[in-house]
Length: 398
Picture 1 (cartoon, rainbow, N blue to C red):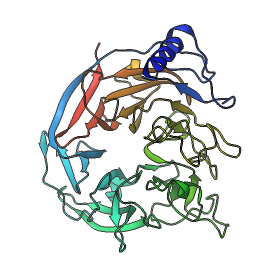
Picture 2: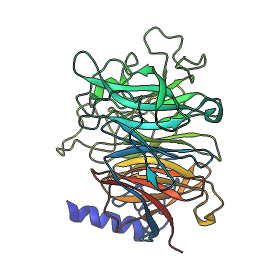
Picture 3: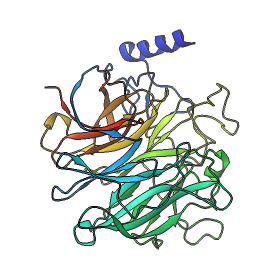
Picture 4: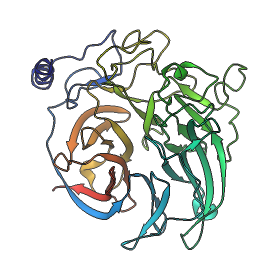
């Protein structure tokens, strides 16, 4: 089987093999193996690149770091550690854990996850955290809250929860939990399906959903399901598995969300209001056992949206950042994606929202990459996912 896959990759990269699926996928792009890229039209864009980049270690000794947020005015970088610590790296120093951080469910994939600054942070100093929270029945779900970062950078004051995933169904898997503010100040939250596949299609549950809230946790009046009695009004889109990357494309202002497939089928979606993105009815992947997903009806199912981009062999993607800085012109109009299993940094070349090429960086690093962000200085920053994790600064090799 592996030999057949290798032949398929070689044919796709060097023989111009067209991507094939259960039906014509329109704008979807498919990537084979080590993500030999194909364009939105289905043709090979170029062979995989082994180009390397320059890496600097900024800080070491982080325990399972998950996310980061750059503070304005050179105040430093907030970094979450999954066991439940929020720290600040500033002027070459890593702070002690900040006070006021909520208790977290730090089992399996759970813990302290994403961190985001409020759009009005310079005046409000509000910081949002996404984390796994245990319920009375012992199961867990994703929660989001906000607090005020102290001027001394040593505490989150007045922390309060603004959203709780309901019901709580996770025993330690699939929390999702990326946070993105749109241009109107609304907050998008990605939510995994807690490894309870059918719930992603159930509109009265938050599992496997993208939800959209006001900054204070209220529900926007134009959310797609606000007038339906059988649906949670927070929901923006559904049919997601475990989305661990989300960001706004600065050129199109379109929200991008990417999610883990099972064994195969990691995908990027451009979620629209009220749309169904398929899981578990539609998927390019299979169970880790090699057997088909029980609920799956094909790679695409009537009434669902085809993914914008698919990796048929999962890199295990986490973290997403768009590059629009003048420091490295060769990286402009790119999106960066971390890879946990493939242990690489993936650079996608874009034309608007269309992916036209793919490049693999940091191929010799041999580290799981959990998050990726673009700093105010124009460098790309990545967090490595391990018990001795690091914050790395990345720039082009030449």
